[in-house]
Structures are given as structure tokens and as C-alpha cells.
Length: 247
Image (cartoon, rainbow, N blue to C red; front, side, top):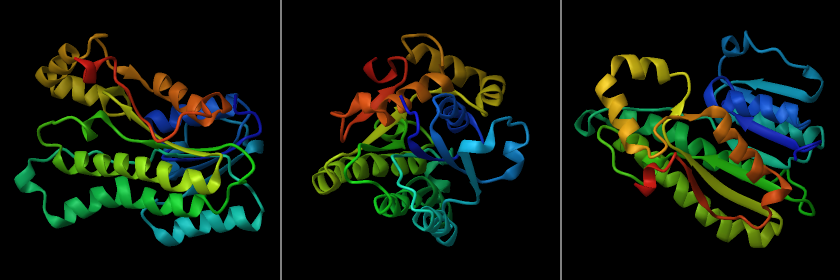
């Protein structure tokens, strides 16, 4: 599905990004990845021939510019972008000051906005290309103590829809979609399950399938949207949540 496609993925150190990273390698894509910390990759084992990893923070504009300067210098045309890097924030509304709100918006929204601006300069207008933004069901559902996080994901969903309308007519074969995972077993799962038992049990009752999702299940949807099997899907926000938002 992705053989020889040039795919850029942010946030590969943990969870969905990590799983997607390995799945894209298995599918013989040329993977360019962004990881914030080198220590997150210590346990990784992979063939480095078709892989390039950039270490840094997606909110650092100089760092992001260097990544895309690399593609332009090497004359690499990108086929896919997955904006997976993000951060959770659980705080009561009245405790979110300007600094905390700025931080969550910088990581989950502003960084993606400017990465996409740079990405569209690296694509081949004559080939299929795809942007997948990783949102959350929190962006379109109400949850306690997640107002800052939800705001960042709602903004991302709005951006996705606007860009599908604005950019696709210009680039013809470019698609932009949003994937909204529900509760997923990533790095915070064990701590959440053990320390917030009542809240964890509440989440299970809200999910018709009766369990949290797996990172591999989310990555399969992302791969589908990156592939040429989804060439008529554009401007969509797809929930993958075990039925949470339907209940």
C-alpha cells in the first residue's frame, strides 16, 4: 500500500506514532520521522536504509525549517504527512492560565498549521499525496478538565476541513483528513487504569465494544488514508473509538 512512498511522521517516540512508524517500514515506505527525545528510540530496532529520523521539538520553527530544507536540498518529494505529535492536558478550566493554554495550542495546533505550510512545497502535484492530522474525539465531545486540550483538537478539525476546501483545488491530488481516536492503549494507559479506576471503568461503559483501542488499529486507518485506496476521501474527520461517539 505504501511501497516507495515518502512519508513524514511526527511524534514517533510513543503510542500511535511508534506503531505507525513500524507499520510504514513493514510496508516498504521511505520513512522520515520526527522524535522529540533520543531516549525514546533506545529500544527501537529497525533497518536504517530507508529511514531518516530528525530529533527535536515540532514547536521550534527553526528545527522544522531545517527538516524541510533537507527535503528541498535533496530534492525529495513527499507523498504523505502524518501530524501525530501532540500532548495531553488535564486541568480544571479555572486553573488553565495563558501560559498553559499557549503551550497546548502550540503543540497540538500551531505547529501543525506551519508544518503543513512547509509540506505543500515538497509534494509532487502530479502524484497522489495525503495529509493525516491526528485529532481526538475530545475535540467534538464535552469532557471535564479537558477544555484546553479539546480546544486545540477542535481547532485542528476546523483547519483540516478548511484546507481540504482551499488546497485540494490548487494541488488536485492532495487530500487532507482528520483521524479522531477514542481512548487508546498508549503509554499512559497503565497509569490511568491503576490510578483512576473509577474513571477507567466509566470509559469502558461508554464504549459499545467494551474496551480501549489498540495503537495498531489506529495506525491501520492512517495507513489507509495515506494510501491510494482512499483517493476520494477528503476533508473528513473520522472517529475511531469503538462506538463512543455513537452511544
